[in-house]
Image (cartoon, rainbow, N blue to C red; front, top):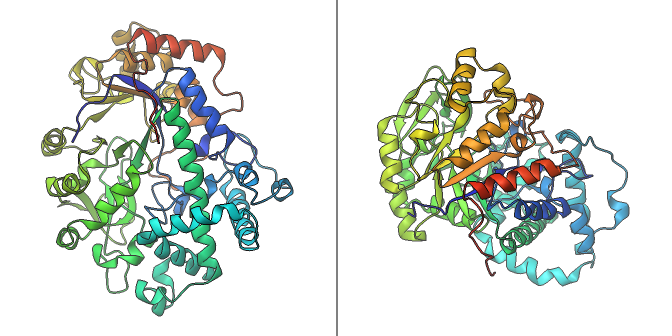
Length: 499
């Protein structure tokens, strides 16, 4: 595994948070303009959250598929460009500009997908047919299962697959489900990957690389579990017998009950971890570096009996440890990874991270209690990624407003600052540190408060909705970020990639 990245910096922003007229950020003009902004402010990295189709709670960490793309991110403007729809098809609905209203966005976007399919099937945009046929062939290992899964789900009012009629709960029976709905789902995925690949190509042309995200677990209601039930710990009714989460920590006093099924690691080992190999291969076809969410789960994961209301009651169960990564390396070569090593971490987790040579994450909002805190910059190794905060944190301004006074006092003494410019004080600490990579959420660059928070762990509602203002970065923020990036030697040294 490669264990070092060039000294550089970047911004964390999920595409759903981009501005635009269609209710949610998408992969169209605003995303391409954002790539131009990143290049202009001398940033080398754009970090995103998972890009899969969202299910429960609109969370990108609860997806209907680990391989498929989120059709909410489709750009209507690019569909018009490709001749699949007209401008009249996107008129009518109005959406809030400052947040995502998923209840309004999802039917609008899915309606567009159905219309594009009808138009394509009716003879429009025939120039796309060779590319669509090639896409279906290239993605055949997962695309058919996913398309059928979503077609059955839609036919049953969105019910989870384990509540479907018995004859449809098994993938083999589901293979008989074909027809127009499944074909439309395949076409929607073709459009997503067409738009995403164009965007990534543009980023590479500007010297910007993309950091993606692989959640360690998959959603219980997903094509992944439906198509591969033997790879998960399920009961006789194909429901999770145990579920994933984390015990109480600094995010939640009762822990986080995620509800994801646990892997049957022994069954996966017998296949040579084939599903994981396919998953990582597919992800690295989309992004340049992968953040491994909940890295400690590969060594041991918190297992909660199904039916518990919190994550307090549970136990740590062993994961595949280095065996999985050895297999991934044999199949895929050295992998560009970042280990999300946060939460309740034991020395053996750090040992596995270091054995693999992976950079961990250092979160400055967790730092200010004592000089030995590993999140303080003077304790960093170079092989790490420094963050002001993550998508699970409050914004830095929001954090400081509610932090205990003892932490505020330590922050002021550590930085020699009074806290009036706390967002940029933490950006400066991250950029000035020895960490190879430094990342700040856009909310901190914009110096926003708690109203701009992306996610509050342990809550199921009200998350993943924030959108950046249409004004974007003002001249003051641009000049400040450029200057800080230059002063601390993080200017881009990566060149464009030829595709």
